[in-house]
Structure formats: C-alpha cells, structure tokens
Image 1 (tube, each protein chain N blue to C red):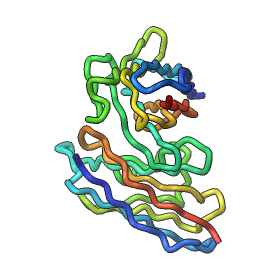
Image 2: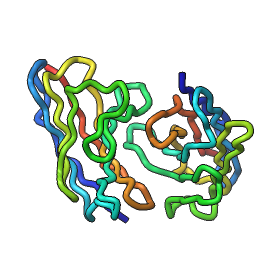
Image 3: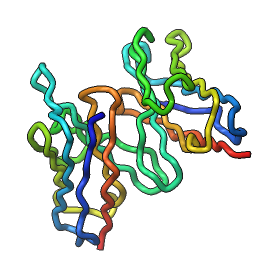
Image 4: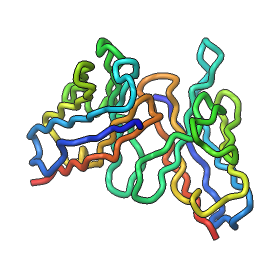
Length: 112
Length: 113
C-alpha cells in the first residue's frame, strides 16, 4: 500500500500569514496519463471533509485561490495564503493513484 | 444542489450485520464513481471501499474484504454498504463520497456489546 506521510505545522499560525502543509508518498503518484493523483481536503471541526484540490494542483469548484497545491511525484505542498479563521481544521492528503486509496494522518491548523 | 444523505447507522453487537445507505440527488449519480470513507472517534480518515459507475468494479481495504460489500442502485440513485461480521474496530462515522468531491454528513456505527 502507498503510505502517505504528512508534516506538522508550527501552530498557532497568525491570521494573515501563510502556511504550508507537506505530504510525502512512498511511491510516485504520477499515472501514465501524466496526471498526479493527489487530493487535499480540509475537515473543519464537526464537519465532513471538503475537497480543496485534485490532480495535485487543480482547485475544486468554489475553493478560494488562497489555496494552492504543488509538488513532484512523491512530495507535495498545500500552501494557504493570508490565513483566515475559517481555514482552521485538519488537512488531509490522499492518494488516488491506486487502490487501496490512502490518506495521510492529517495536519492540524490552528490560528492565533 | 448536490446532496448525499447517509442512513442506517446505529449500535450493533460484535458479529452482527448492518446495511448503510446513501441517497444521492442534485447530480447524475450513474456517471460517478462512489466511495465509503470512515473516521473512528478522534481519528483520521480511512478509505473503506469504492465502486465504479456501473457497479462492475469494486475495491476494498484489506481489513473489510470478505465482510463488507459495496453496491449501488443507479435507478434509485443510492449507494449501499453491507457490513457483516462487525468488529469493535469498525466503530466509526461512515461517509459516502462522490469522486471525493461531494460528501455526506456521515452516519455513526458503533459496534459494542
């Protein structure tokens, strides 16, 4: 199985600052079609997960351009610019390159 | 508006069965792969199973293979998860998701004697 390893944020993050969340996969997530099958989600307290980006860097519908995904085949970053109160929660990366789909353990973002 | 509404959760004894449903609306259900994802209390997300648009291809995590069955009824726009031989470690909130872009609110399954 592909193992997804997420980094830790130096919490709390001051409102208005940027935050970068990292995720590493144990195998390349680049498929033969050239796309990188990596999703990012935000789960706010008490809510269902929300898809932020897919194919590593494509923002989901309605997601603010303050969220941007980047990376290589095995190392990924979700950058959040000008952090706001509503960005607080747990961020998960997920690989959908192959089954079983696997999630990272989550990275908590707290705001100051 | 896209809606996914799970139902069927509850308290069940170890070894017993439960069937979850997920009613979809607001999109063409038959065009989308679907999945079940669970989250144990205070823990992270865990993919459980996925099913292709026509239902012909199904995929499971190892720990539920042979015990859980994912299925769908495209005429009813409904996704199912039949869970047999339940264990305490299956205790979680179960979410259905459409290509992981849309999620339901979740239904809690508690396996305990």
